[in-house]
Each structure stands twice: as C-alpha cells, then as structure tokens.
Amino acid sequence: MCGRLRGVLRRILSLFYSKEPQFYSQVEVHNPNNVKINWHAFVPPGVMVIEKMESVSLDDRTTRYKVWNEGDHAAQLPTDDCIRLFHSRAKHPWLWIGGNSFYKSQDRTQTVEPYLVPGNRITLDLLKKIDGTINTWRYLDMTFNELDFPKEGITINAA
Image 1 (cartoon, rainbow, N blue to C red):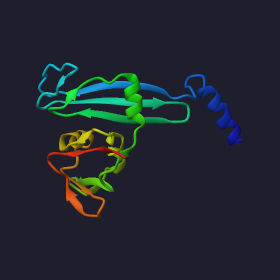
Image 2: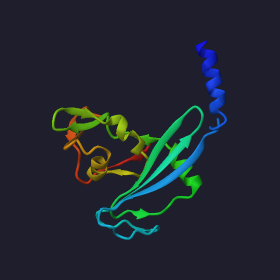
Image 3: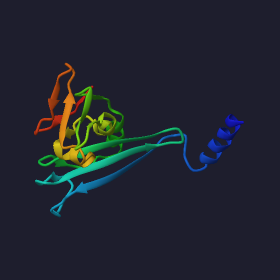
C-alpha cells in the first residue's frame, strides 16, 4: 500500500516538477554600509556578493554558492558557465570544519559544503554569515591537525 501511495504522490508531483533538472540562480549582496554595487567591478571593502545556484527536479534539489569577496572582480556568469561551475568538483581543504559556540563544539561540515565551489575563497566573514553562533572557527586538515581558521581565508581548488 505504501508503494502505491508513493507512486500516486510521485505522479501528482510530476505535474509541478520536471524529472529533468531545472537550473535557477539568485544573487544576494551582503552590504551593511549600503555601498553601490555594479557588475563587472571590484567588490568594495565590507561587501560580499553571493550567487545562489539551484538545480531542482522531481528527485533532487541541489544548491551551490558562488562567492565574491572584497577585492574580487564580480561578474555575473552566463547560464552555461554557471551550470558548468555548479557541476564542477572541488578539492576539499578539510575533513571537518566547525568551532566553539558559547556552550559546546559544533560540526558545520555539511553546512559549509554548498560553498565548496572551485574559485571561492572561504573567509571568516562568510563563516560568520553561515553560522553566527560560532565564535572560534577551526578545521581538521588532511593531515589530521586541528587548526584555527586563517584570517585570510582558504581558496577552494578544483579536484
């Protein structure tokens, strides 16, 4: 009975969601000082531009984020380049990332995963935006050393 109900539900949802993935993109600007931002310009100090890329289908929903930090050249990517970047593989710079909040140590490896896109620079400002409850960010590198997250950030490379 449960299998039959699942089949009926799947047919109803297929009216609204395609089996083929549909690609969506949305840009957010984290701009506490209300500085004017233009595409094809360098990101001013204190500003972060994040493009949310989503692939939605009947079977799956996947999200990735392209990040431009202070000093980066922000340019909206054409759809084909966004899709290529969305599906690219990134080399993970850590085995674990997280830190201490006021009451315990917390694992944020899965939360940070969508930001692991080749070319992104993961910074402390971005990590604070992802989870503001953690006051000291740390990570476990590939040699099993637990390190403080560097102030200059870590750039994600292609696998």
